[in-house]
Amino acid sequence: MTSPTAFCVLINDLIKELKESKIGVKIGDLVISVLAYADDIVLLADTPENLQKLIDIVQCWCKKWRLIINPSKSKVVHFRNPPKQRTDYIFKLCQDGPILETVDVYKYLGLFMDEYLTYSKATEILSSAAGRALGGMINKYKHLKEMSYNTYSKLYDALVCSVMDYSSAIWGVKNYDCMENVHKRAIRFFVGVHRLSPTPGYTGDMGWDSNKTRWKVNTIRLWNRLMDTDNERLVKKVLLHDIEAHSLNNKSNFSAQIKQICCEVGLKTCFTNTTKIDLSTVREKLVDKFAQDWFNSTQNMNKLDIYRSIKKDFGVEKYLELNLSKYEKSLLSQLRYGVLPLRIETGRFVNESREDRICCLCDSNCIEDQLHFVFHCPLYDIHRNELYENVINIITEWNDLSDCEKLSILFTKFPRKLAKYVKNSYLLRRKTIFK
Ligand SMILES: [Zn+2]
Image 1 (spheres, protein in one colour):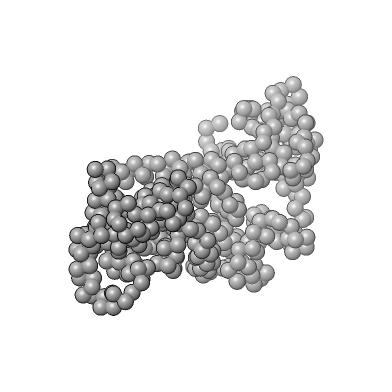
Image 2 (cartoon, helix red, strand yellow):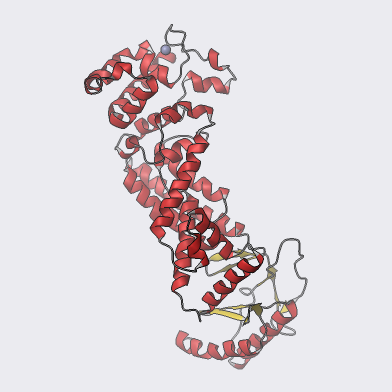
């Protein structure tokens, strides 16, 4: 068999024969016995015996046309709910022929489908592929030394998300740690902080859409495509049946996922009326909701006490959009998330009580936290004077502001000057300590 066209013509007979057997999975009035895509055939049946009958029909047809099925590439999956045992039926290509192996997961059209349809294998494999893509992207970044926020975001979208989001419309409403780790690693690398830094800090400053936001938008995109699909098409019939099953028995199926997203964005009527949904509205609402969850998550973290008072809204921070050096960017991030190795942070590692984390670089007897480092420690006066030039002239009320207000202004209006101050002062601090 060399010509794909000839194969398509031929295979039509087989499909017809399989359908005429009336064996298959019943969905409403439909009986689905076969799915065919190019030279790929999936047989569906409700019992092992029936599946064997379908296999026999295929085998008979192959014999007639002198085709050979590759038994190593053909597998059986028993889809079922968890407590149920897997069938011990032995499937055979023909009576004395090779046994068809029953497996717990099978890759169909690029998607790994496991026997309980949890998609854990699928997401695990996608996340490791996405992780490799991210590794390549990071290498490129290291090679280039500098990369702008926009370029990095676009590359992440094109190289990593495209892998991570494959078929996410099908599996994308749950939490998958493996995927989350790729997303967080990408952000941490750009802002320049280690893995123990508080997550809401760096995700809030980067302002990227969360994985779940993207996946939910993809799910609604698929819904819209299905709404445009003719009602006579198999995939649409299955969807309509799925919707009905959900409305009758409250089944937690694909439609339930769609409904959940619609409710989340306040557009439940689009689900009940089976109409298309405006994607940008969906994204906007999901982003708003995520921003609210993000805000709540910042509230109870000790390390983020200063961050909380200078960062109110989810979204990209100015200092990340400037082309600061990697080192400066990293120092500013560490300062924001409370992980710059000042004594307030290093004291945590040795279980020092908060009051004992005193600055050893001056005699002020103050706790060495971020605010002491930026505004009060006399060791850095020389750099501070440089920082204050201009700033005091432009911000006339400067002396009446609280330290947190000042820090907030430095980050939003004078990020370059702040970066220079933090870098010079931090280097001076190290030099003084390790003298
Ligand atoms: Zn000090």
